[in-house]
Length: 365
Image (cartoon, rainbow, N blue to C red):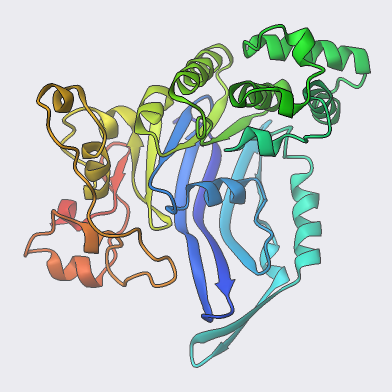
């Protein structure tokens, strides 16, 4: 069995709303894994919990009173560490008759503990490419300076000139034109596509064990999106970096991913090999995955001039999660035989084929 570099079990990331005295269950019992050298594509609508899952892995959930629990195990150099170890010591929950009335969080203690654990992990073992490259880069520092600082901080290279040469080499590797000139540019002097390439160079220059790419093509025009996807495909082939790729663009996911996790309402509703889940005509799919696939243009749809299918209803309110299937109110495949179960019992994520798991009553009757 291939070794899991990242193993997430029962991850819950909640934010407490004092006005409603209820939790916003942004990520609710998510379990997923990424084997060494593979790319996991995480797909779903906006609000499904994709980015919060990534920020939880990076230890970036610090908003008061955000609460995170479960396991995030990272295995590097033969050693496994739980990135959430002992975080529960900094949260106190007050209940009355089984109802949560208040949540108190030692924010300073939480952040100190997180920094102790994550300072040796961020950048060096896990690097992240964020959605908006222009806002992620420091506008008051040149792109080259930011990359050299990352190299000196997270790699054995400490010499300024050597770090500069390495930064320029990475700018060249991500196909930025005239990298020597771009090295001295500020972010505002670069296009969105160039900034994204600079972010990719900064993330990979430290040779992390895991790369998280959160919507790397969002906000870019179609031509630049295609070039960024081509670049990621080339780098994946050359470097074999273990990657968590987050996107709502299924075409990007299908092109770059070995395996896929489909998220809805804060949890994973389907996971497995990308070929089994995203292939044309795949028979075994969660109704939500099938609806997503039907809502994107296909060659057949264009040829027959057919209409795209919309998913009826609204995105799930993660404060008021129903007791049954989270997709029940929007599902068009509910049968009379399973209707009561769908409405009142949430299905487990079960295996229907080797490595392919689905959270749906349709497959267990």
